[in-house]
Length: 194
Length: 194
Image 1 (cartoon, each protein chain N blue to C red):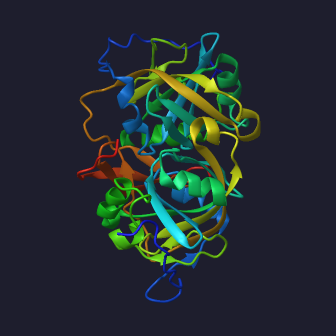
Image 2 (spheres, rainbow over the protein chains, first blue to last red; image 1 turned 60 degrees about the vertical axis):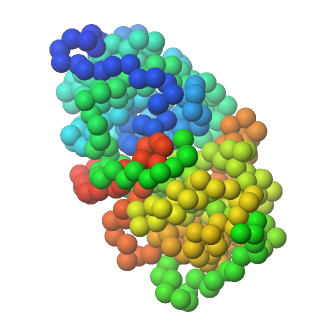
């Protein structure tokens, strides 16, 4: 399989893609549950994707997301150079691909081709959305001052997409060494918390 | 109810407490699933507790945890002054207390007394463990350089406790405005990922 092959970008409105724009004010509710995500990056028409569990919301609006991308990851150099990425949220249906992505490196293979992931054109960044994920957040680096010491990037979400047909997504939550807890029942309690 | 009353610290080995020491190398697997946590702080024999969903692992060992504590929270000043706290992980059984803690402030009430939470003595910090939580992580501030701008504290976990009888904890994952997803089924896939 070729390393970081030129990626075919699909149009997001064709071929069964059902994503709709999501107001930025609602992004926090997607990420503060702590789902495993697929982070995509791209440079010179070549894209990569990595699995990531170390992220946190940092501000509601504009939404800021902090995340750790180790400099051992191929994505580190792409993210640092382009200052852009997309955070894509998969559900349990994608569990095998999520693990396969996490156990391989874009230095040696084109992970989109290898694992059957569809690259959809983003609106504001070059990195593609992952068509199989129910939500995608286009991001730009907002603050890189902790990158050298911790690999910690602070990203601003500049555009958000969601598949509105997914009501209670079975998100994956990594508990180490290939063990995941899947989001189960929904509890609703009266609360003044945002 | 008195504000930040002197707290009664219970001995962790008495009264049905079942916590055991957990190796620091295993802490990441508890937090990377993204559970809602209860953050405890203490100063001058008075303790507070807040609900927190904005946190991420940043290093495996020694375990580093990044988290956002807004300067609007009473806990902010306590954490900043003492440089210590405990991250406690509740399960769905504690959902009502988690919401009640998140909807009140330690400026006006003693939340331990008000919501029936038990303060257990920690080993390395003054802030108490929450006896009703299945895991507790004693922390010290490791890096405060993003506190002024983002309320972002980088904590080092210096001692970890777990109730070994809890095998697949029904952790809470906040999805905004009092809606929580509860950790459900466990998926195990072959993986080389840590």
